[in-house]
Image 1 (cartoon, rainbow, N blue to C red):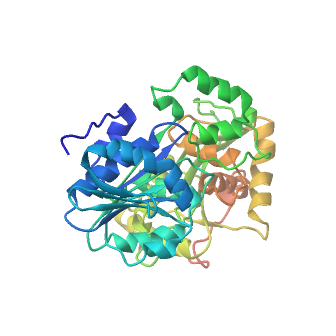
Image 2 (image 1 turned 30 degrees about the horizontal axis):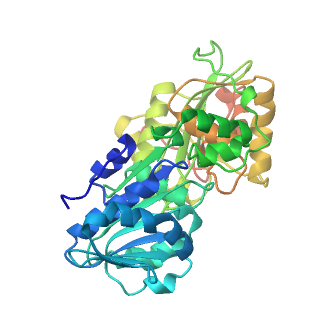
Length: 417
């Protein structure tokens, strides 16, 4: 192992140094993905006392074309033998590195893996990982590197976002563009940009997880203002994530979004959108804190099972803090989501009646807005804002409007129920 000449780019070093068991790297073309993968294959194979090491590409032909020569060059000092017919390399410690194609999953069953690289994971069926390769890592407690250039919002994006959330210590994710390879001529990348569509360039060189552009919402419509309007009333709208038993959000990575908006004489001013994959106790706590601080004239929550789930912790908080408020149930109103969101937001954005405070939430919100509607892109933040449309009619008559809580049951401010 000491004979290996390992030279890493700065971005490769970040991934190399990480202690995460599962590493997810979204990187643009010609960033040096294959070289990093080869080094990690060799080093992990040399450290393995038992089990095999796999490099998996979408097809076996791609595995050969991408990795075979790179692997032979990088591992030359520690390679005992190589067989191109079966695409296997045996190292001096006896560990075998095999190059496989995800299009032939039957060839990967029944093995014990110490380490695994899945290259261009976006081009593979997710079942190859979930049903075949993840179980193969179990007995050795093996590690894996997922690496590739994005192809829209698919299973690679979901895995990347899961790792980015850092809900599990075993996952970590990185994002690098072709500009991060300091061995590439930046002028050449700039030239490619001029000859490619903006979508293709962002995906291939900038490693952007993008669906194709939507024609509904325009970037030039967006107006920011950090000055709170003098008149108006606060409203809060909540788009709930789906919940599993026990209060955990579902694995499909949708989020709960709590939207705080001031409805005033000239339109809406969006102060903040808190969002996350919270258990319902945490959702209730965050919502209560917002209501306590801003005293909105009305608070609305998307109806359904998830709304019922936070009812109990909300009531508990009301009793503990001796502050009570009622909930307006928000509904789809028999309208499909695209029509509902478009009707609520498009006109207001176009005529400048919808302005945004600056905050960390802007990036995620704008990403969802400009790519709406697309089944590969979440729209939780956009949906939460659209629900304000159902609440704004209550602002003018708020002081005379008799809000009801859960099936016409009013909370007694003295007894607390």
